[in-house]
Length: 253
Picture 1 (cartoon, rainbow, N blue to C red):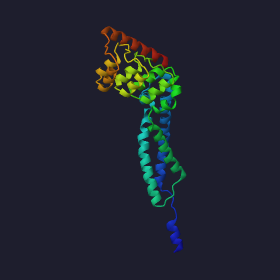
Picture 2 (tube, rainbow, N blue to C red; picture 1 turned 60 degrees about the horizontal axis):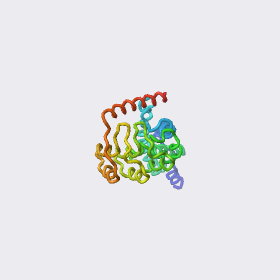
Picture 3 (spheres, one colour; picture 1 turned 180 degrees about the vertical axis):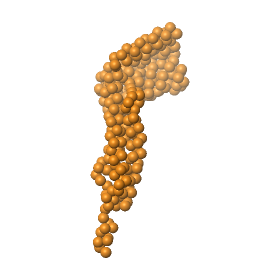
């Protein structure tokens, strides 16, 4: 009787299905980890080198596009692995350390991928502010309404009136994007709310044209004037911008 009770309470080894699940998970974790490293590189070093990035764009259009399938596959694997772990514990089956390590690794990789790309700029704002693309990055953040990042660039010494390759200031970009909080920050820091871009348009023109009523109202209450560029200005600006983009791409390759 005692022997039968001991055999009943004995922890049984993992089943073949559990081992198959583990062997499938390891390469999936590795592929997802490679993708994670690539994304982090794009968000940090590559962005500092080339300016605002469409994260994952170059990867998606190259041979490495297959890596983009890794995260959803890993998420599915993780759900199955967690359910398998629960079943194993309930049936008193042993779970190897390698299996637990795989689960923890999967959670870590997916967790890193879930971090917003702008977190890199928050964490390394000093390095980003010292890069030669700091102005473009600040203007891009203003267009996206990222108040924290815009404030970080200004606090680290990026000129508030600096312009990107289109001649747009952070104030113009924030108006075009309809971000009233960013415009309020820039106004408080004495930014010129009437600075026109290469097309000859003012921030108020951008806000009105894009139907951002709150941003337009704030600009008008602070003395902003609506200015729209002439056809000649627009044509000249388009040519200058295209030439600049071609020149920039030539320096990359």
